[in-house]
Length: 92
Image (cartoon, rainbow, N blue to C red; front, side, top):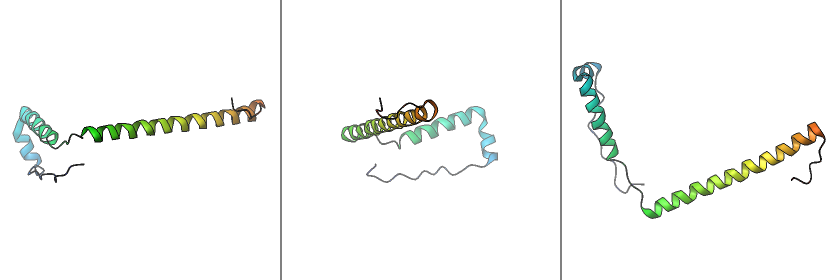
């Protein structure tokens, strides 16, 4: 999605001893610094990309709704036929 490569961070994993030296509030401050560093890496999509992604998601949701509706109708009629002896056709 991004045209530029991600920058490498120098945040090497710290040992348990160095984490204990920070203290409670130091660890909280370090957490928020890391959160801000990660948020700077986020790339905001363009308007065209956002519209495209939205249409893809809405299309997929519509497809899945139709698929689940059709399967529910078919299996409902099949159960009605097996247990109640109702005719399968017409489907409604």
